[in-house]
Image (cartoon, rainbow, N blue to C red; front, top):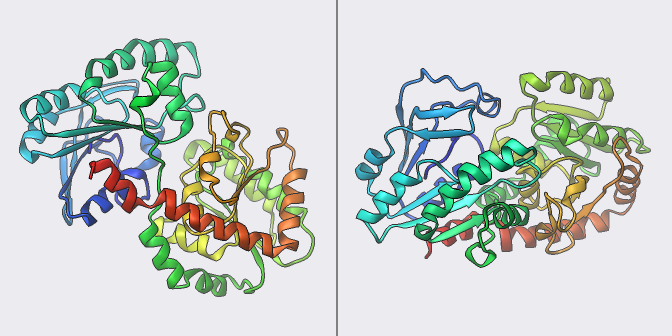
Length: 391
């Protein structure tokens, strides 16, 4: 795999693909950046002086490579990819997004024509091409010609959302029949184990939460686009004392003031808990603790993880509608998800929906059963990993 960022402790797509490739009996090699700090990567605080290094995790080898060039953290290429490909001799090369190392991949494919090369794609109009420079220069001027130069060598192109597929079609001119939707999945092996171990019940005891209480899960990367304040305000309107709110995750340095704003809204409320940053295992355990998950803002991998843990989803992102830049209908196979979209700053609709679900636990249970069916059919990495290998 060639990917911009990899940290074994996180539950990103790269980690889960690597793990499930290994489970299927494959030896995995990853070429990635020298940083392991997700905030450093997201905030483009890369230290170019870090040397190359090698990590080994079971049957996986991680090659942390410096960049041959890195222009404003948008146009970058890893050093030494040709040598690493020759050393590892992969049968399958999985390229995450449109990498400037495609030239080395192409030369390797020419030497070993039986190699399967696949590319996935994450960008859409909600996170990319939001100004002229990005659209005209970065995407259409640089990456589009690069992609089309090597398009014929790609055995599969996998947009991860319908919005990503639309972006590739409209901006890059890739025909829809060349693409197959490959959703970001969930670690269903871990989800099933945690549910069977009843980790959520254990956490309820630790937090002092009654078994019959309704617990709402929210959070993720605590930044303003996530609109977590809307969830807090809606929760504070709920009557009675039998509902709890768990806010998982943390803020980057740039969003520290937003986190303080959220804590200020919560005050000393006895049934609101901020967990701080959690690893994958702890995230899934806290989802097991909850009865439903609410995400008022922009898309997150937590949407898939919540479905994998059998949780109903309430989503408030306006762009999540069908045809929107964060379209979410593909995750709603069995009436397990609802949209609660309202004007900026409003929370009356979300408050009303939470109140109704608190009063009708049968509906919560029905949505939860739908979430488990959706996860088994769409989000199981056992199935997704097998598909990418072409087997």
